[in-house]
Length: 135
Image (cartoon, rainbow, N blue to C red; front, side, top):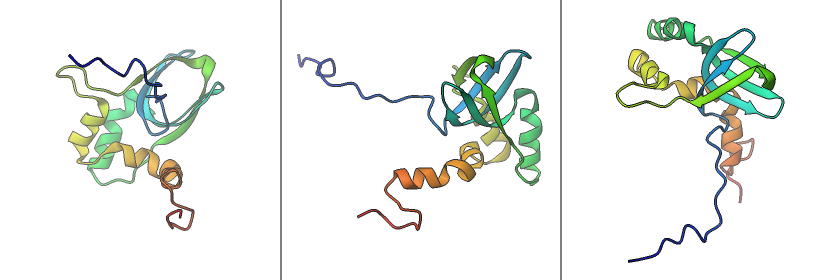
């Protein structure tokens, strides 16, 4: 039997709630649920691009019909954030992102984040603003 070495290795800190992650945020005062992509998360609050869950089907229908993508960018102060969960499937129940892709034929993540995180991701991947690779 080979012993596990993971116990002895330094853990890698990876936050599932990083920019670009698709989440469902439950808010208080008033109680609302928003679905979208995290743009920024801090002690002050959550910046999210998405829609109220009640408007999700309307957004998917608009995209399916070829209408321009219209999704709000909102900031919720941390005192309003009751709960935030990753948009993941549960058993046979599809995630909202999967439902969006099924209805529209498009991946929602690029639609939600490209305008805001596209250049940040390229820079993190070793590209400079001019698109050249770092040497």
